[in-house]
Length: 73
Picture 1 (cartoon, helix red, strand yellow):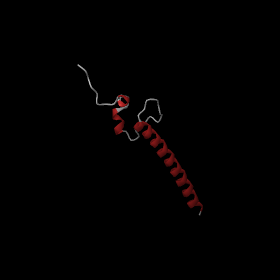
Picture 2: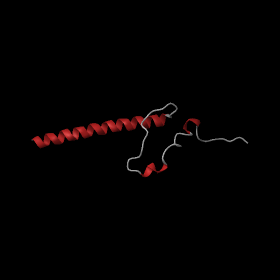
Picture 3: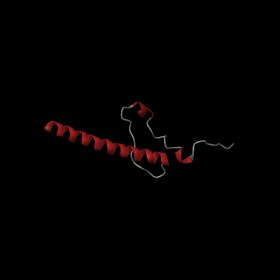
Picture 4: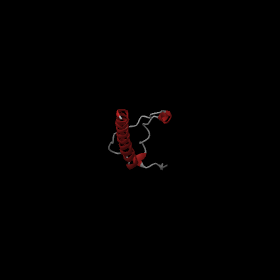
C-alpha cells in the first residue's frame, strides 16, 4: 500500500525540532540562522526577526539620546 503525504517534502521536518512549549514563553527561542533547505517562509521569518531587532535597537538608542537631551535642557 502506498502512503501519500499532504505535507510538502521541504517542510516535513521544519517544525519537528521546535520546542512545543515555546509558545508559552515570554521570549520564545528563535533560531536566527539561515540554513540550506529552509523554506521561503522560514527564511523570510528569520530576515523579518533580524530587521525587527535592528529597528528596535535603533529606537532604543534614539530614545536614550532624546531623554538625555531633555535632561540637559
